[in-house]
Image (tube, rainbow, N blue to C red; front, side, top):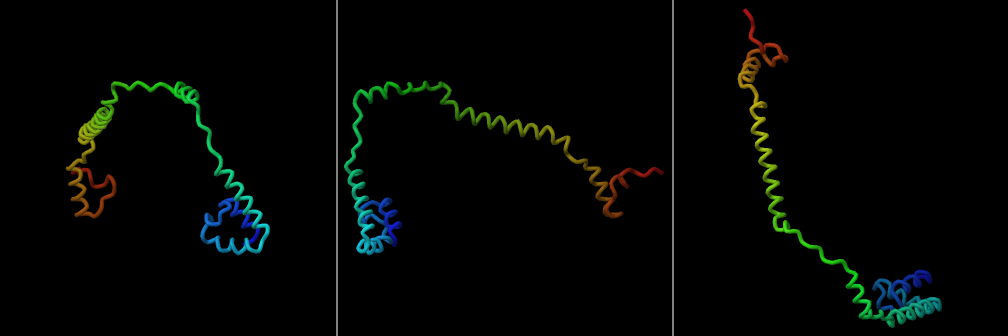
Length: 142
C-alpha cells in the first residue's frame, strides 16, 4: 500500500478502518503504523465523517407543505370509456382476424391450382422426363 492508495480509500470509505473493504484493512493498518501521511489522511476522513454524522436536514414548515400541496395539479377526470377499453381492444383484434379469414376464403378460389394442369404435368413427367416450360402441355394437333 502507498500513501496515494491509502488517501483514496480514506476518502471513499471514511475514517473508520472497520468500514473499509476486508481485503484492504490489514494492509491499511500496517501502512498506518509506519506512515504519518496515512494518519493525517485518516484524521481528515474522521473529521468529514463527524461533520456528516452531525448534519440534520431542516424540517419543512407547515406553510411550505401547504404551498406544495396547493400547487399540485388537480387529479384528471376518468373517461367513462375506461371500463370498455380492454373489451374494445379484444373486439378490434377479433374483427381483424375475421377480416383476414374472409379475405383468405375469398382469394382461395383464385389461387387454387388447376387440377387438370397438374395431372397433365405429372403424366408428361412420368412418360417423357421433366417437361420444358410450355412444351408438351398443349394437346398436339393431328
